[in-house]
Amino acid sequence: QVQLVESGGGLVQAGESLRLSCVVSRSIFSFNLMGWYRQAPGKQRELVASITSGGSTNYADSVKGRFTISRDNVKNMVYLQMDSLKPDDTAVYYCSAKRWPGDLGYWGQGTQVTVSS
Image 1 (cartoon, one colour):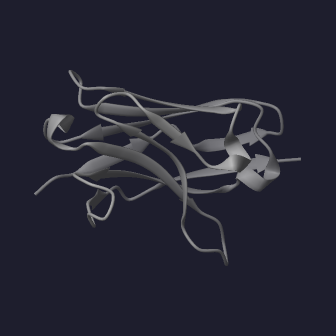
Image 2 (cartoon, helix red, strand yellow):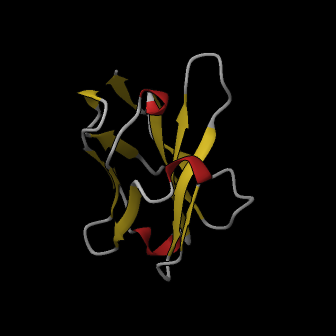
């Protein structure tokens, strides 16, 4: 069983930054696609950012230029640096580990990010 644990969420004001971390219980070399998703109240879960084992990244249009995803294959960690946060970024953020894009993958329990105006 693979476990993912997110941390780093919290309450910040608009314009501030947060860095989310996700630790995976086994080597992430086997997961080609690591990602961060978020779900706001009353909304569907959406992809925020993803990164392949080769380092290629993909971002939702709403976070391009503000968020940066990275992975450390040695420490089995994935990070999401979030700058210039907006109230619309308020959501529970989830880390995911997938072997391919259609894989159901493994998910963490989520970490709450709240941005006040």
